[in-house]
Image 1 (cartoon, helix red, strand yellow):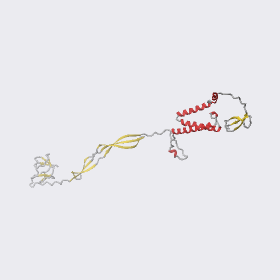
Image 2 (spheres, rainbow, N blue to C red):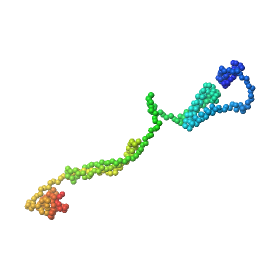
Image 3 (cartoon, rainbow, N blue to C red):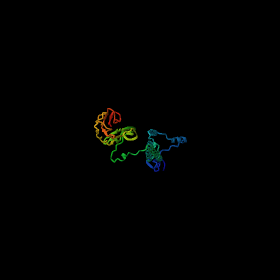
Length: 313
């Protein structure tokens, strides 16, 4: 027997009715009702009779589902809420499939229950996939993955730490360029004498750097330009190489004993055929050391520069 659940003539006790569960006979029995004469119902009226009206419970449930889906759509969780509603529908379908029907929700047999379960499972799959695509789950932090079992891991702060900003500036520095020191041999200076003929002067150089700082701390420095503003002057030291002149010969007195020439003072200039300055290039025969002051005529041409002082070089 494949009739839906209801009261049917009892096959074991004629004249009585027995409850058919849709699967088998139940234990409930009742006297058979006297059948009422059939009343002709128009086809339009019969169709209207079969039309089910929404009960208040149905209206409340549909309104609740619609509101949840609307709120979740505004909050960006539409697909997640749709999957949740589909899961609830799966549970209701399973209950209806076990019990045979859930009349309050319009599930009148197991066929409808199976259809509800299939449609709800499809919505679960679609809603879950769409929600996963919109809100992907990021990888777990390495600190959580590597933490040993039983070790509590501190949760990160809700406020992210701002990343320090790197600042790049140009900085100029003036540095001193040391001067070089050289020595030269000078034949105009006697041996053993050292004279600084040129004083050394340091130079100046301007260096330009590109400096990168992070949180006020320098982390990088790059030289981008060099400019020598003052050239250094080398210090020159002269070392004497000139040999000193031999000592002048002693004055030779006039053999005739003529004494000193009165045209000269300061030193005795002998009276001779020719007198030269001692230590000079003259060949005598008489010599006089300097200096000698010319007070008369320079008869021996000793004052070559005409300043009145002879043999002063």
